[in-house]
Image 1 (cartoon, rainbow, N blue to C red):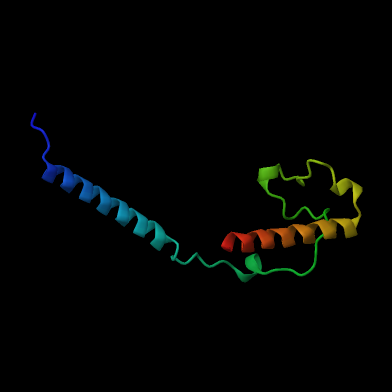
Image 2 (cartoon, rainbow, N blue to C red):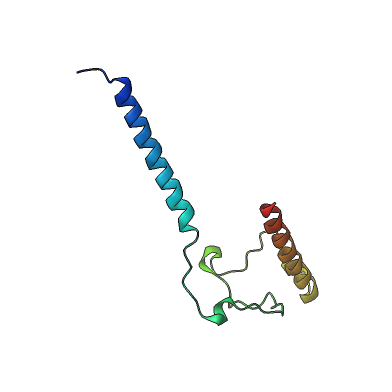
Length: 101
């Protein structure tokens, strides 16, 4: 087996750099692909806060039960639940803005 020359190594490195650049460009370009359109009712926001007893929006990740490991919602009335939900929305929005810088 013959040893690789500098020219061979240079060619291999340049090819690897090209592959990495193409992969990076493809990953960046995939962020600009439009998401499929959904029905307006699935994305419309509601200004009213639904009570904790509304189980229509429970998903299988939590076993179709309200995820409340500390049992905080059992000790609160509807006004307290609404306050916690509003605080969660506000903190989520602040975190998203902080992520932007």
